[in-house]
Length: 312
Image 1 (cartoon, rainbow, N blue to C red):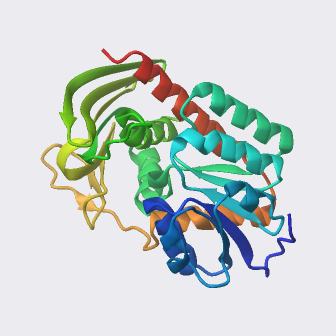
Image 2: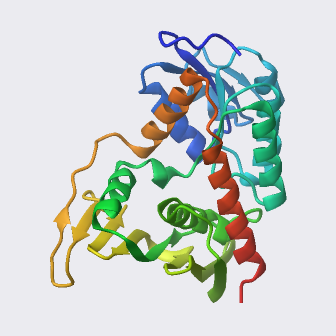
């Protein structure tokens, strides 16, 4: 790995130029202190997405082996997250991988084990955990706690993928938020199929999930059959309710009582993906691995696998 002194521009590589890959490209272009210098993509139009100085290769192995990067971002289908993350760890590269970290607990355990063995930086982009609203929600939860219950509703029309179950597309966010707020894995995890339907390009589902954390219960409703996007997370506390609605401009509200209309809480202006990249850059600059992020990614995968195996 090259020198990462505070004054140095960090050279980042990106694997994948799909919808989220393009989000990374645009966001990196607007940030100070980082530059996208390599892209692995087989899409012919990728050359028009990046600067002329960015080297494009059709084989992601070439990007990993280049030897001139300070970190790599993986924004590909999750079926190949584990292989790519392990290759980056082996090459000594810090990794920011899209959610879910892997599609099996066995793969996730292997990634965490490799990160521990190599003292590697491995971060998982559970994007809502990087939002300003989530930062304030966690702070306010301590002020108005203890936490008593969680309820979430999330979904949209699609995506319908052959290689990724709907649970892993939509449930990853909610499970990550629940685990991050409670601070531990659930003792029980139950999934119930509410609806399944054949659509033109795949299978649609609606699921009801229940995570039991002892004295705290999280109820999660997710679906890829909803006409309009939903992303609502409610934390019920002894001292009120914190309501995070990612579809609104004013994303976070606090209600002290049932009749209380609530108040909007002030948030920072930076966007979640900017904050995720800034956190990744800070970790690279510090040169200190924090295994907690990779362990959370593994724990999320563990819960999703348990839910997937026992959908009733």
